Amino acid sequence: MITPGNVLRHEFVGLNVLVVHASNPAQKGISGLIVDETKNMIIIHTPAGLKHVPKKHSIFRVTLPDRVQVELIGSTVIGRPEKRITMRIRQ
Image 1 (cartoon, rainbow, N blue to C red):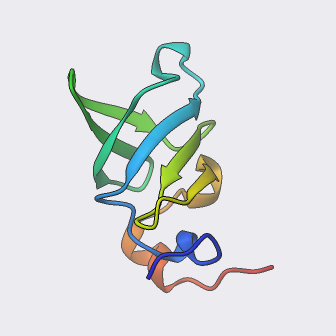
Image 2: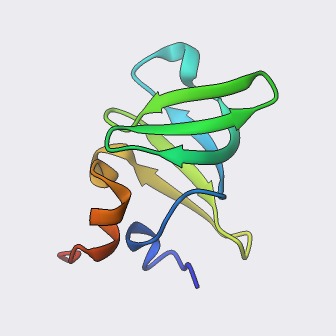
Image 3: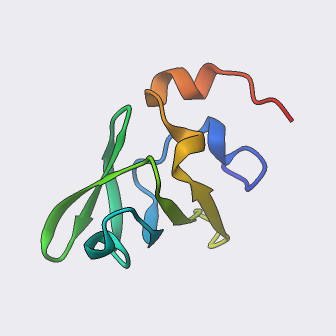
């Protein structure tokens, strides 16, 4: 189960997201469903089509399955999703 405490160690595909801040002002406010994730990008399905948002210099508000919202700083989730799932989080 995904919780705010372990969200960094889970897959983001299938979660709803809102781009709170982005280096490109045109990408701020994009919302939709995360359909794919690469090392440096999050791909969001919106009514206008697929949008590619870089993780670096972005802040995302992700809605977890239990409707809790968590803000993620993009630079903390840079990396391949499969590597991030197995990495150790330092506190």
